[in-house]
Image 1 (cartoon, rainbow, N blue to C red):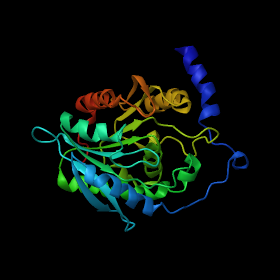
Image 2: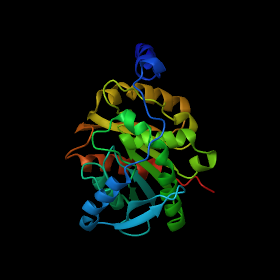
Image 3: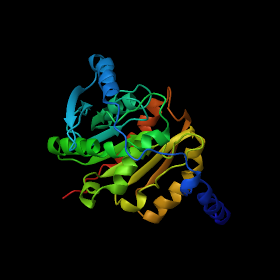
Length: 279
């Protein structure tokens, strides 16, 4: 364990520290999401939703966006989960989000999967950095809707680029916003494109809620390399219910492994993630 800690400390500067600006590709500071593409995505999926109800939410920035709300099965809900999809996808994406938004209802959770800002299909991680600020109003609108609908705990769950958007919000949000949810599930945290290191750190030092760090056995290299960094940061945070879980036989998009992913997350939520910490 001593040698492992030394090794991880040696790796942190290589994979987690920001690069000097002179070494980074140019990044646009702010960019408008592709709202027309969001409209097209909604048109493609809305009539195909069999489980749940399509709803329209509006953020504090005045932008309307799609959400899919699904109620818990079999009795009163334990609480509610906001789901944030990966880069360029939609709130009913088949390989991660659909299995979770439907499967977690069987564990007793309401789910609200929301459309995050999207760009052109060819956009990279560094392109998406410019639209991260546009995700915050959507996250807050989703949490606010669930808080008004159900008195139980609220969980924020994100996958891949959705974790970057959630992290950006957590790093810049007011303390009251960070007190509006009760647990965080990050799936495949740290995923970026080759040659494009993370632009922002993990936000664990700002959180007082339990965190589940879950990733695939054959996840992207950056996700796996940063697993030790995330574990050390979660340990430093000190919450007794933090956990790090690897889903065997899976890759970053959990193709054909949605059930295993759902069961791992559902079990954690049942055990420790469903405690309401709001007054």
